[in-house]
Image 1 (tube, each protein chain N blue to C red):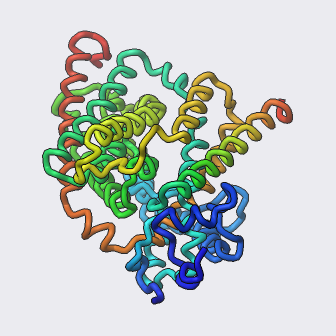
Image 2: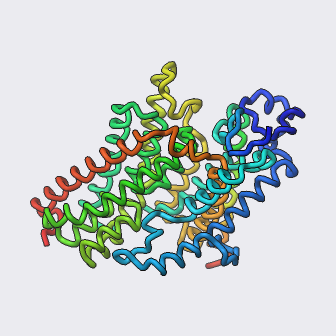
Length: 49
Length: 396
């Protein structure tokens, strides 16, 4: 059934990911964050100075 | 992925289906076609909420509120909507809640919206370079010790009071984080750590802002009663209220110098924020491990070991303290955080009904916030009086 008012019967809880799926998502966030922070920091030393 | 799941677009609530279809770590991202509608919804809400770095869109909620601030005029040198904590998290969340509750959320958006689960650790890790501890050294030893004491005492008191009034421990934890750090953002940061519901987090935001509004009215009266010097009132306001512009409003109401000193002392509160939310997480995590069979212990439920992404955050925080991230990089990384949290807040807003925010959490959150907040103010008054009498803080 089309959800008309946000939450539905099966739940709409983003934090409800469990098990392997949750770990994969966390790890993807970590990898992306580490890559971005390292790139920004290296650019700071190599390009701006 | 089953055809049933594809048709309804609902998010799988168990990991069995995911494990069967998983090919690599990237399976958690779904296919581009599935995720695109939700991602576009997040993007549209974000760029019409905030002046995002790199997006030259003038038609934003941020600009509208800024214009209204000009119409209303400053209140003790502070813009009205800044006192209400309008910022890059709450603007898109507000728009998301409005859109979700007025028009509903199509099921085809949900896959993309579920990316919030990845955006939260991403944003929190990138926030680490923002907290450069060395900046607080300038305020002096006694004020730093008072900042540290206020942080941990407030967090502990809030958790104890929420337990006494039998508030849901997840709700109590996010209030404790927000009140102790003096920043409702900490409640959002604690959301994935505590496994709090979105409605509890937004409800805690309202609790904290309402407490701040009452406190900013009363604090100047308390300051005059104690005959606090302008300098000390700056510290009192930064720690007793927090929330940036709310503390400044109270302080500028007390006197111009008090306002300037609130800017000066606020850095002590700000740089210690990570210690506040990590402390709340560790306390609740240890409690959950000790009471794993107790169904009433909900906070951090499902977390079996210290989250790896929190360790990465701590590692970057240490690097920030060692001054590895200099100002240009810190600023660029923070711009990415603004993007990340805007997208995440849009998705969170779309997922919440007014009932989730105001009805389900009840009024106990307000009770806990006000009791803990005023206890903190009382203890701060005592600490400041002792410091003035012993000469640790200036008497005039």
